[in-house]
Length: 416
Image (cartoon, rainbow, N blue to C red; front, side, top):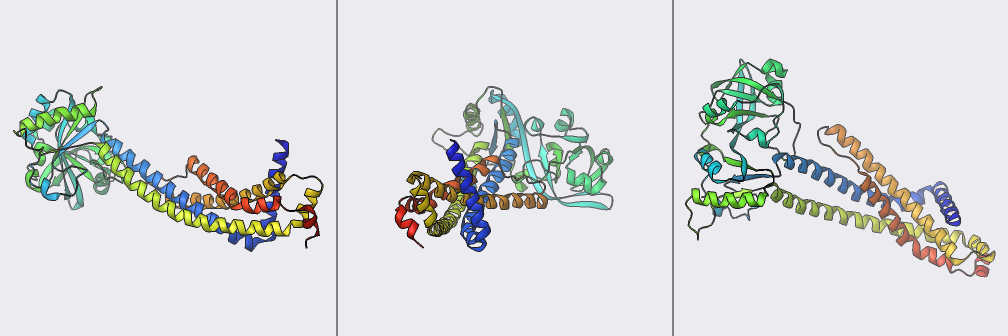
């Protein structure tokens, strides 16, 4: 163990000496390794961060929630197959609650974009209207910084009240406390602000509730917009504790077929979507991105490995006399092999470290440019970067190291 550590230390010093004495040659040789490690770790870091942020957004939709809609999330592109399906109806809400015993919460929801919210002479354009019945707050995080959420009576009676997203109350009133109690106009109708949502930040998936959303009771929102013509409504159904989503979907399928009076030979005219569908699609997308980044990195590392092999062959040539002297005084071929192999690994680790440093600087710049998007260089990706560097060093340095270990000491000492 002690001799191995001495060899490692000696190899590290020789690698540093190569960097100092032959700066340009070593720099050009390490450039390929640096670019290769930068490419592969940058792609892994970006995809990991994207995946983490998107999965966080998806999980906020509810992992035990089924979305009953007209359109399937994993549709095969056959638009004509789904376009004539009926849209979910508010009148089906009671039947679903009565027939689906495994459901804990059921909400009827629709969204309409491009709306205006007015307060006096001020207004906010292109905001999102979210209409909902009761139970949405049981399936979606509704965090308030001022005021309150809808009462059951307000939701049932369609009272003209609203809860504003952060962009809206900030744009019209500056503070959430100032917004609560004010009367704003939405779709030409007066409505009183009873709550202000906490800022949620940017979401890669958009989400049902965001900072540009105002929420209305469904029975009031339908007086502003007819969802049957101008929106695609859906049901959100949450399973009871201990009930699997698969069981909930089976019960929903039977209930909806009965509600729609479908014959046994007819296919479903509705879609039951869940978060796992989107997650499977994401896995294929990120797999393709990682494959593309891996191919780029492979060719960069291939070029870099040739550069490392070249510098090691030159190093062996320059130290032929020293190799001969070492072998003449008893150095075994394995020691010579390990010495040059370690030097090759050290050179690759230096190049890989530079690549990782570039990735780290890139994450800092990206964090400053996109403060709401979390991107970070994980310890696992750092380990992968150094591991790949070491493997490339072994592959690129083995042949030069092996040729050095096989030199005849007499011939090596006499060489010029």
